[in-house]
Image (cartoon, rainbow, N blue to C red; front, side, top):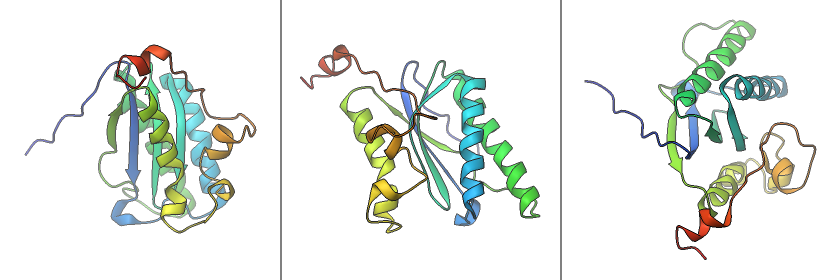
Length: 170
C-alpha cells in the first residue's frame, strides 16, 4: 500500500512534528538539545528555510517553518533528522531508527493563525506538565520570539496587512 502524498503549497508555512520511535526519548541531556538546535541552524542555511517557532520535547519536536521552495522541505527534515540520528546513535551506542516514520507537516497560512500556531508550539511544555512557566523552558523559541532574548536561531515573522485582510480578519 502506498503512502499518502504530503500537501505542499508554495509560499505556505508548515507546522512540522517528528516523534521518537516507539515514543522513546530523543533528547537525554542538555547537550542533546543543543546539538539538535545547532543542526537546525545548519539545515536552515543549507535548505533556505525560515524558522518561526520551535519546541523540543523529550520525545518529539515541533517546528514552524517556511521553506523558500516547497521542494526544500523534505530535504531539510531528512538532513536534520539523519544528522541528529547519527550523533545520537554514536553517543548512546545505538543502531537503527530514532524517529517514528515520516515527519508530519501541516500547511499554515500567514496571518493570525501563524501566530496562534507559534504560541501553541511554544506552550507544549506547559500542556505536558513539564513546567508551569513557559518562560523557564529552555528548549523552545518562546524567550527569543516573545521576550527579546538573544536572537540566535529564529527568523522574524513578517506578516503584511494583506495577509490578514485577504482572509477577512480585519
